[in-house]
Length: 345
Image 1: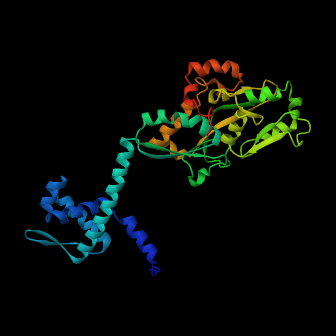
Image 2: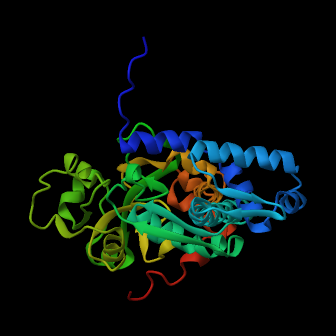
């Protein structure tokens, strides 16, 4: 005994129709409607008349409506056929738009890539290299988001990120670009007025320029300095790398800068005492991003920008700044930053 089938909801009906429809059948129906006969449509599509009639019949059966009325000299649209043709034309326009988008994406590199990076690395290291990227990819726009806060990659706040802390999302691709070596620097003016410490324990007698922001563990210095809470120890505190570096270069005190700092400004010199930090520089992106050409181009550019073979200050081992200066000249690095911190911003 056959049981009565439960009535289908409107959503279920739509889903069933969607599963049964074949876009190719709709496309062929549109061609027959445009040509006005199966024979003319066969010539236009290189599909036989019999196949066209069979495919249109299948579409009519799936929709439950007669779409074409056969006549001696061809076919005409029924009222339902007119309605389906209007809907199908709109669908074809959307499909063609998607096809153009796919074709453009495969053929050329264009559009925008959102890159999130720590404020210091973005301002001092990547921005001087943007001209080279623009020359190679003139139709690409880099949307550089310089901030010490971590970008929310899961919500696609950025296509790719360069940061010093590991992300919490496990689904992201994470690779090490290199290492950031940080040590103490002071300006020539500050050294002339106040001298320079000969050991870490003496730092408490000098002025310290501190950066307080996410991904910057400046508080580590306080664990090795006696009486770090003395009022005169922290003379200036900033939440951005730009303000922090500029304050050091103008003589506000001693502070932590990357070992390549003298490539940015000759106003600072290393304070050669036994205190330095090493941070990992991480490249982070969503697994799907590697299949997008413009994002892939940005990833390749970032890898080149932090290449430890070309830029030894990003190597795993520490290289003293005085030895790095030879590489500054050989790699023509200094000209990228010429005048950046030499004059007032």
